[in-house]
Image (cartoon, rainbow, N blue to C red; front, side, top):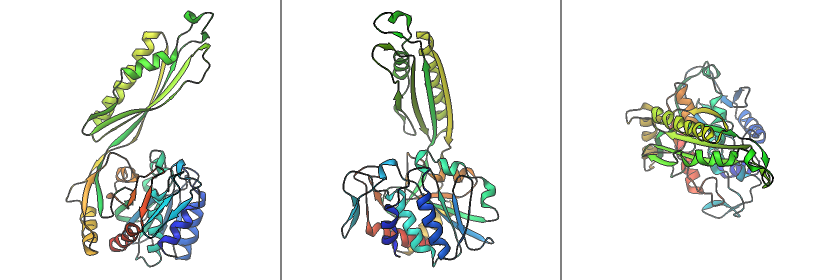
Length: 348
C-alpha cells in the first residue's frame, strides 16, 4: 500500500488517547510483514527494529488522536484530505504514521517508535525508560509531530506544569441559612482572579482551562475544582508562576474560611536546540538533498521530543504538513504527505 492507502485505513480506526489498540494492531501486522520485530512496554508504547546492533536513526510518531478525531467522515480531492466539518481529521499524527509505513519496507536499518497518549500531555512517552531502548545505540531521533510545511524543524519548546486545585467550603441551604455556608465557588473565583493568566512574557504562558462545581442553586456549594497549566522555556519561571497560582488559592481559601488542596505535576521540561546540533545538521542536509526549503522555528507546545531529550537522546521535532490540528477545519495536503515520505527516506 502507498502512503494514501495507509492514511485512509488509519483514519477509519478510532484511537483516542489510551484507546489506541486498533492502530497498534495495524502497525504490528504491517511492520511484521515488512520483516520487523518489536518490543513494547507495559503502557503499550511500541518499538520496531530489524537488527539490535549498530548505531541507528529513530523515527517517532504517536498513535493517539484528540477525542474530536473519532468517527471521522473523511473527504478528499486531488489536493487535500479533510472532513465533513463535524470532526477533526486526525492527520496529527496519522499522516506521520502513514509516511513511516510507506517507507519502512525498504528502509535501511532503523528504529520506529510509536507512543501512546501524546495528546494528554505526552503521557505515553513520559513512561519510557532508558532500558527500554537497550541495546540500541540511537544516533538521533526525529519526532514527526508539528504543524507547518515539511522541511520545518522545531528548535525550542517550553516545559509544562499542571496544577489541580480544589477549594473545600461548607454546604448550607441557600434560602434558609446561607450564612452558615462557605461558598467554594466564590473562594475559587477570588483565587483565579488574583492569579496570573495568559502571556506572562515572551517565553512564559499560563491558563486556567477547567472549572467544575456541580450542584444546585439552592445549596451553598462546598466544593470547586479548577486546573491550570503553566508553560515556559525557563524552569525557574515555570516553578515561580506555579507557586504564585498555588499561593493565591491558599490565600483565597483562608480569606473565606475554606480549605485548599493543590497538586502540582511537572509534566515535562523545556529544550533549546543549537544550530550546531548534529541531528539538526543531518536533517538540514537531508532536506536540501531532496530540494526541500529548510527552516527552523520555536513552538509553544510540547511533543514527545521533550521526554526523549530527558532520556539523553538527540531528539528533534519535524513539521509534517497538517493545518488547523484538533479542529473541524483540520486538513493536510497530499503534496505535503509525499514530501514527508521523501524526507524520511533521505534521513534514513
